[in-house]
Image (cartoon, rainbow, N blue to C red; front, side, top):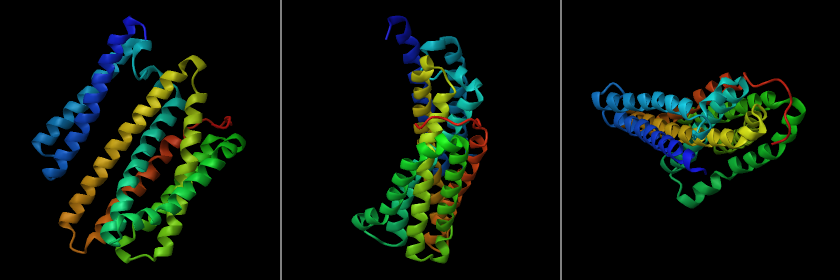
Length: 272
């Protein structure tokens, strides 16, 4: 990297580091102190939001030297794909935490058996990822991503009924469906993002996608664990209902991701 680009990139990195850490720390404080209305949590979360504004100003001034070029978000296709990637990061990484906890605390399985029970989701994701590129090339990224999000929602919906004690086979089937959705969404989303930028802008687009995907994963995991902790501490019907409510938040997240996904361009894209 040229010397004149090092300092802006370093400043951007520190701002993003403080931004992500501040928001996650503020959310953890909100969980410890009974909600985001507590003075400490409000202060930290407010500081995190100020850092977002600070980074936007810095990125506009830094131009091509910024870690995340906010000018790319002026393009509808890229903004929609990045917002979808952000929400998908929250859904993916939080499910990697919630599902093992669900089987271990509700079904009292050990770590080895929990891993075996999660295999259907991995198989579904592999099939979805394999088919997603060709389907996006034929029908367009928007159709594939919207369908994948609906599959994710359908698979998650069964887990929201954890309090009713769904059968083990229905949980396995729902994991396959959820995995199909997850696997079929990520590739076309990235393909749509790259299709909306010029070739010379691809490295900056990739940085933005990866950073926001990871931030979404961190924030989503923090929020869902706070919801689960609050439900476990206040639930009288046992951990089943607590996990059911938490998976309800995950279901809402999948539905929310349909909003930016509906803004994807109609044109077909090449396989990612």
